[in-house]
Picture 1 (cartoon, one colour):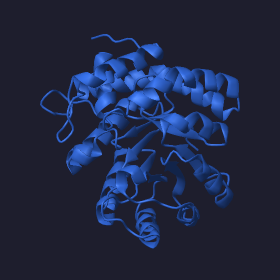
Picture 2: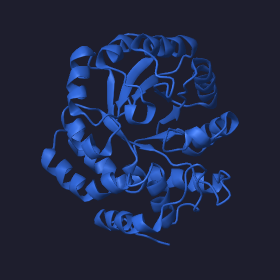
Picture 3: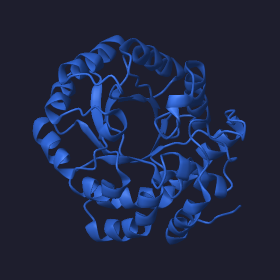
Picture 4: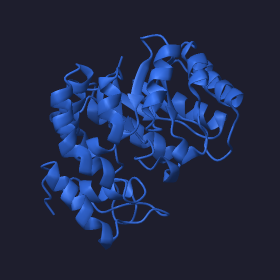
Length: 294
């Protein structure tokens, strides 16, 4: 089971929106050295919505190459089309990803039975560990604990990223699923408590900016050390909040650029962080002892 602080990696781009492989390699080295436990490639934070299929798959392949088996790589391969999700998942397996993360279909609002059949079809089509991803604030589709329980019984479906921020969901899923089903928080603000209550880790945006502290906090929380985990989480609280002051990944890409790790690149319809939000993000970085280099 993959555990710990799993960074939902930004996709570095130049100011024309072209993917920057040199900066991508730099980011990978930064995370490996900082103690990040695993990487999610081309998830929501990686701007999956604005990368075409070839770009999407090339970034996954590049991350697998740059990581070079030092930590696990989880490829974001979800789509609102089941056939597209199967294709992306097959290509991620071919690229050497360790697992795939599949967001619930967005916009088309499937029923719970539709969600079950969607993920079942992908699991039957591709022999790779698959993690469900429930984020109704993004998708307008909420995968209920009972549906997660049904899917957990299917071979190759090994865990869930629960991003509602509702900690009662954790206890419901724990009651319905076996203990070897991986439970990941998808909400940085509640991740500490999630792990203290038996979660196995967090797929984190904050980890892009403060990877060492996120690793230390999650490690302490998983081991049940509330005092240490809470103390570290208090330093990260500003990032948990202010990295979402505008739509993700706008603030986090600004922060990573200011750390000197990549250029100021993002794709429309997303735009660069506006001046009125810079002070809050800068203050949160300072609170977490993150140095602004640029």
